[in-house]
Image 1 (cartoon, protein in one colour):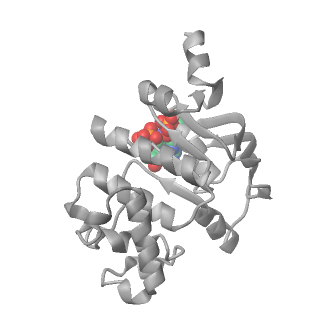
Image 2 (cartoon, protein in one colour; image 1 turned 180 degrees about the horizontal axis):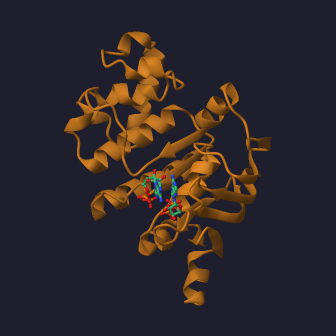
Amino acid sequence: KVAVRARNLCKVYPNGTVALNNVSLDVRQSDFVVVIGLSGAGKSTMLRCLNRLIRPTSGELSLFGDDITTVNGNKLKQVRRRVGMIFQQFNLIRRLSVLENVLVGRLRFNASLTKRCCSMFRHFSRQEREFAFDCLKQVGIADLAFRRADALSGGQQQRVAIARSLAQEPEVFLADEPIASLDPRSSETVMQILTQIHEERGIPVLVNLHHIDFAQRYGKRILGMSKGEIIFDGTARDLNCDN
Ligand code: ADP
Ligand code: ADP
């Protein structure tokens, strides 16, 4: 089953930079893909096209068979809901508690509510709060539920961000350099959590990394990008043979 399909994707930024040059890719339901490449290779642009944070200049994109190449408005919101996105920056609401930050994932991108920094608990049913709590359990930080988000370490904050994505019940997970600002130990933990989510929930995962050692240890499938093109697609073992 194909989760994400890209055909002949090109992205040219307004300043003329060709960030993606004719990229075609199928991400299967069973895939845990790590995308590697030097800074500027186009990894981030590709991910941002796949959840339609940006629009490709040309080419086609589909999500579980639904064409999402040019969707906008409510259809685009639906796409963002179906795709869990993790970034290098954790983008938590600093003054809110950990649990409230996870509940933000349940707000279905209702921006007016998200911006309010008063307690959000009253907007949620008991089931919703328990669901959010379960998401925190899955990333191993349920004990931090009532701490303020900005009191946590970087690694803990990234785990909150993952829990917030889980709360959204996504069909695919995309992570753009999720460990780039973390220490080695937190990096392992975050990669293990993503692996666990993939294995337990059967969600396809696509992760951009620039550490080749992490890529080789965690990527069931590795994509190598250079200058806006996919130049390698195989397993860690294939990668070693090529070198
Ligand atoms: P990455 O860590 O993926 O390499 P960068 O540090 O290159 O990201 O970019 C950070 C932000 O700046 C991104 O939002 C990107 O869209 C934007 N950006 C990167 N390069 C340019 C550029 N040449 N002109 C305008 N914006 C850029
Ligand atoms: P990577 O994630 O592999 O570092 P990016 O997708 O961030 O690569 O960038 C690919 C190319 O596109 C780079 O040359 C970068 O400078 C450029 N780029 C990224 N974002 C923008 C932007 N918003 N405007 C112009 N150029 C950009």
